Length: 254
Ligand SMILES: NC(=O)c1ccc[n+]([C@@H]2O[C@H](COP(=O)([O-])OP(=O)(O)OC[C@H]3O[C@@H](n4cnc5c(N)ncnc54)[C@H](O)[C@@H]3O)[C@@H](O)[C@H]2O)c1
Image 1 (spheres, rainbow, N blue to C red):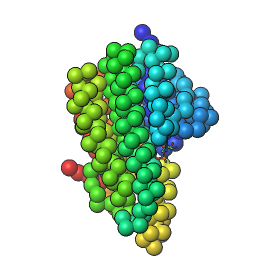
Image 2: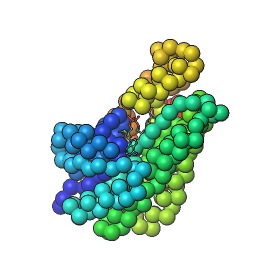
Image 3: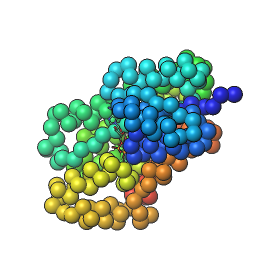
Image 4: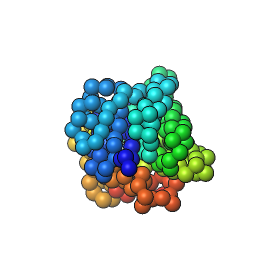
């Protein structure tokens, strides 16, 4: 039997790269996707069983082209991880219309487009499937400074995940989201700089504040998220759908 296939969006950096590496280590054929095809190919070349594809989640048809190619080449699409996301920081009153549009286009409409493409392809090849959408603690609490458009986008991901899970359950496609906390990635480094500037604090002080906000007492590793993704894609979670799994060291509990 051929290996199960998994597509990861935004896989050339941070959490996405960790998810791709983790799934390749668990025997999936991983399709490493990103806007930069060369970066995706470089990452795929270092994994046990992987290929690369260009996928811009804001481009209508981009996700469908990748999903259809996976079915054509492998005969099955088992797993899809919508990880691509963007953030920027500004006070609510200062969020520019263009920044709001970009956040919602990537973080919400991107997940929507990818979910449709993945589910259609899974239905077409008739296998059971599992979709994981990467949300955030910002999808569980708005008590975060300078992130109002991001909070709006991640609450939307949690709601969309439930709606997808409800409609796709009869087709044996499970859909869950994960809500990470303060994960050390390029996005995290950018946010440290922005928050330090907006608060007039040092980067070290902002970082320490994030650690102090985390009951488990350390920043999150991308691998902490990747392990939870593997669980939600795998057979150990076969009765879980519509869940928003907190993987955040206890920062936000609900
Ligand atoms: N780092 C954190 O603390 C944190 C916490 C909670 C949730 N998240 C979420 O985790 C996910 C990954 O974030 P990260 O921290 O690894 O950030 P990152 O900036 O390192 O990676 C984000 C990836 O998304 C890609 N991307 C952006 N726009 C895209 C588009 N239009 N099409 C395809 N890919 C696109 C980027 O190129 C990059 O590869 C995001 O959804 C983010 O919101 C991050």
